[in-house]
Length: 124
Image (spheres, rainbow, N blue to C red):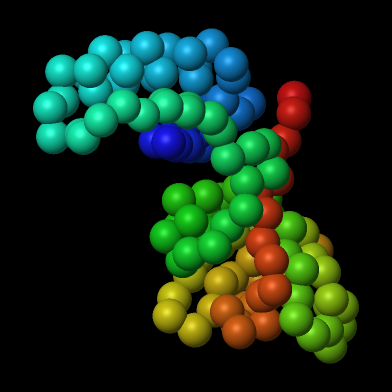
């Protein structure tokens, strides 16, 4: 099984995620290429899909790619004055924390306090 995830980054000017037609197009193009690629032994199934509208963010680079976009953070423990969950716009990251705009404030959330983070797609 060869599984490929594709996504449309905000820099593409997208207001929505990856659609079925996008997956079909990538699957056809990649499938044609892979049929000529002799370094892959044997047969395989190719699966092309999207990580989903509310994509999970795991790495610092994930947060950096979605800077300026809305995210939903579930925290390991409550932060005083914020609680155990917050939604806000990613302002930036460094090795210790991610900064969000939350309720009009610049809030720094240490990486160690983040249990789970998801990208929030805005539908217009």
